[in-house]
Length: 391
Ligand code: F6R
Ligand code: MG
Ligand code: MG
Image 1: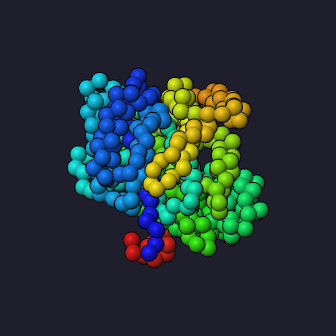
Image 2 (image 1 turned 90 degrees about the vertical axis):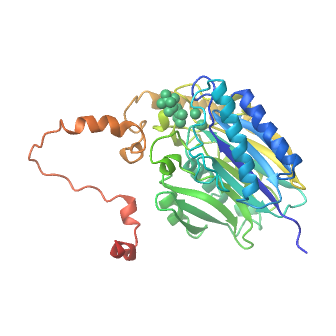
Image 3 (image 1 turned 30 degrees about the vertical axis):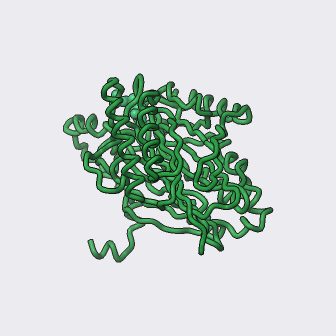
């Protein structure tokens, strides 16, 4: 008989926060913890850890029920609902923001919360790293995931360790078209980079080890604006990565965050800024509602219990990364409302800017000069000939 499997579920939502979109209130953390404690005593989940990164309430849960389980998702939904109720009572800002629907029907996907879940057979020691970011979008993990699982200049094990040497498979989600593609690294890295370089649309959602197909990483891909059809905050993402013994080492996984790369999000979800790795004590967004931050919590999973966490970025080894992030923040802030600090027009579609532009449209006058051809956007180029015919 095969061993019983363990599931790790990280489900998060912004249910309202203290002093603007800044930080989760302790009372909302407390009520969410109480709901999960009840779920644990009823046997719905085996263990849990509740925390926050900026204004996002994070539920980290372990259980034996597999991914997309109704009972686990309902428990998370109830925890968010109760926390939102407390947030409303306290007059917290944007209370209930990410709970886009009142009708729960078995799964939180598509209702607002972000979800990263993976199921596996535990190894004798099962180290994992959970990443949680605020003021950015799921595609922010594209570059680090690439570096962890495909870049030998980041991950020495890809070259040195025969268990990693075969490489990894990346499953990339097309958030505009609701479809996915799986590409192999290292053979197809140029194709992989050609699409994940557009992180607002193509999101690395899963990584599997080649050879045995073992799950290595998952990322939440929910995009709130695409669900709601309007701007409702960025889709602050979460990710789970397995470490050691045939997967990248914890240090290789963290190394991918030593370059504070530019991500979309920050103020009003409308600006590029550096992703700054921080410990939990600095997981709050202040300057210009940011800069975007990411926390890494390390756990060991044993018999579906969470041992830990270790607050991995809370270390002097990341001080210089943070310093560089702050220098980049200063530099890019000086662009004010100009691109490339402000996002490009495609991404601004989902913000409040179109309302402003709408008012100006009638004031443009035709000059009779030659019009330039509109550029072919990626979506058009990536539509298959068959789909075009069907249209
Ligand atoms: C970004 C975010 C904040 C708000 C900003 C304006 O994800 O949550 O930067 O967009 O504080 O918020 P409102 O429009 O609620 O005043
Ligand atoms: Mg908020
Ligand atoms: Mg947030």
